[in-house]
Structures are given as structure tokens and as C-alpha cells.
Length: 310
Image (cartoon, one colour):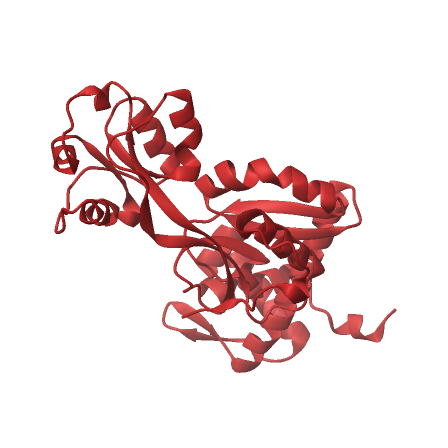
């Protein structure tokens, strides 16, 4: 037996400690691990007894880790991530690397998924796992190697690779757009559809058409896919990314209502933790997606330096 293994606490205790350090309460940790708060408390007591040092300080309703515990959890989290990746490789039946990616739903479905076959052809030894995220999160804490981000280069503690700028098109179902539209101002009389996280998009669109100062109201959606279907079924005019609606326009399900594509406020980025250890699988994915998105067919050492968070 390797001597250091005598000092390892139980895995249940490590999982409880990691979750409490990240989430702050036994209740939240219990919810995530599908346990009772009492089971979490017992696991924490056991891990403190096994390690022989106090790890947590109770501060009102939250548990605050000691500085030593915070350092220990940071190292334990990396080990837990390795265990998780090993389990994924075992379940996938392969011995290659596993790369965990967080995606925006529309980008993942309509831009990335149709292109992934070429990545698999070039890197059959890399298994990809995906989760859906709409907002920045702690990638290191959650065992995610990279994410697709929309907006500015502002993901905390992350490196950024610009993939593409976004252009949006005002579109509607053919029946809704059949009426006389003599100018962009006529759209103010039509029902407008908008995304909850981008309520300023219509104001920017009208400003680009020479009508500044507009802040129109409209039906609000939390995802593009739902808003896209609402537009197809005639519920209103939607501002949608070109990569999302090109097929619908070609098929006649949607038609441009007025003007051409307009530059949106944000861009699409590949982001990854700034202080993450070297990861050949991530390097391979970064090179591949750069070639797909911006035509950079080069090795990792040839990529432009990543953009720092602002």
C-alpha cells in the first residue's frame, strides 16, 4: 500500500467538504449530493476527525472554511475531477481523454453540433461531454474545461478566444410580414419578440436603422429556440442570429422584415480557466474550433495570444 493512502479521508467526506466549501451551507450541499443535511454534517465531522484539523467555521447560517481547508479543497477538487474524467472514460469504453464543455443552447445546437463530426474524425481518442449554461460560472470548481460565452471578454479568471461576432436579422413568418412595411418605424406597430438577457437588442436595431431612443416592449423569452418557434408560428417579429435563421429563411419559414443583418452588441468566445493545468485535449479542441470559426489552421503554439478578461 502506498503510505499516503493511510491519510486519505473517505470519499463521501471529501464530496461533502467540497460541496460545502463551494455552496456555503449543508442544505445546499445536501440538495446537490441528494443527501440529508444530517448526512452532510456527519460526513464533515468524520473528515475533520480523519484529518485531525478543524476545517469549517460556522458563521451564522453559513459554513466558512478555514484558510487551510480552502487550500486543501482546491487540491482535492482537482483529484475529484480526475476521478470523474476516469469514470467517463470507463463508461465510454475508451482510454482516451475526456473534455467537458459548457455550451449555450442555440450556439451548441445550430453552429457547433453540425461541425463536431470533423472534430471526431480528427480526434477519435477524445470523448466530449456537454452541459448547458447560460451565464458564467466557476469552471475549475465544477470540473468543466471550457465554455462557449456570449458577450464581451469578461468571464472572470478566464482566457478568451474570439470565435465570431454576432449579426442579428429581423424576421417574421411570411403571413405576418405580408402587410405594407414602408420603413423600420412600421415595426413598432407589430408585436416584437425579445430575449430576456438582451432586452436592449431592439433599441440597438432601431438605432442602426436611424431611429434612436426606442425601447419597445414585447413578448419575452429566455431562450432563442422558443422565440424562433414563436416567430415561425406568427406570434411576432424576432431579432435572431443569422446562423440560427439562415435555414428557416432558405426554407421560407421566416422572411426578413426590414433591412439586412445588424451587428449585435456581443460576440461568441471560447473561454477556459486561466490557471488550469496543461490539457492536450483542450489544446486540440481550441485549434479545431479556431479553424472552423475564424480560419486559423495552425498548431497551439501558432495561435494568437488569448484575450485577457477585461
